[in-house]
Image 1: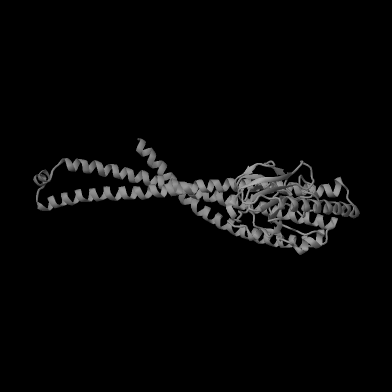
Image 2: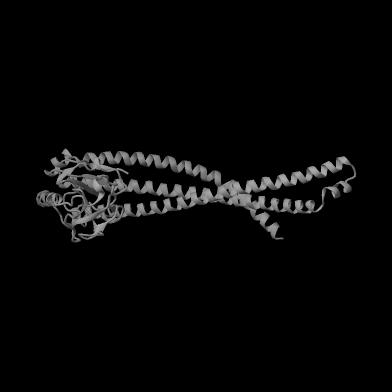
Length: 387
């Protein structure tokens, strides 16, 4: 009764798989095509945004940048949704493969049990008994061949079961990896949603709350430039006091502090200087607001400037051997001055939308402002980043 019920379940599962899996394959193909279109649109939107960022700093220009970033966030969220759907479809496919493997294992085990049972019965009878029980030599040979067939069937089924178990283990690993990928994508989508909300709020603030005029915007911009230059001088002073020979033992290799590699302003960027009238001793790496920042190497926290207001905030790390790194426009801080931070540990979160926590006024959108100083001089971070 139980075997009959299991057979019906197996048959139903096979029928379901034969219907669902081809449809999943078609959906996966559609999702792949849609994702490609979205990525093309994201690339085009990013180029347009980069072009807007190079224009003269005005109130309207800042609003245009915010509009461009909101559109970019919308596209990126659509792309993340497509990726999430794709991973879910892949997980459905893997689950189908797991069901199929379990069914095959069940059937193989059933056949193996019967073969072992038959072999046991046959082995209880010796060759002499088989010979005596045979009507002629041909019958005897047939009996011997049958016993050999059963033994081969046992060997074959054991080998097949081992292969199926290996496939099952592999599929379970794929499912775990897909589940991790899904969680990462969902977290990224939430960060991007928060990022878009911050940009929308910044635009709303500029349009309605502060009712800025162009003259007021320029006054704020000029004050921010003066404040920024003071901070750059402070950073340069502290960089000269960096520890010598404390950490890293002469190695100047850094991991990327965030996963993004999209650089929107380079080291000593001429467009940045033309826009804000001060040198850009950093690279700006575009990333959603609130992205965790990780220490690129072992370090001590040299300074933290953060009071929870919208004023420009930053973190300085001393890596020893004269190397210092700076992280600007931070929206939150997870460390304190003098603290040791091992490589990969979270030190804060990125910011960058005008008017938001820690962003300051000199920003064109959410990103990480990343500086590298060596022996008191600003250096191009790209010369030290790897991994």
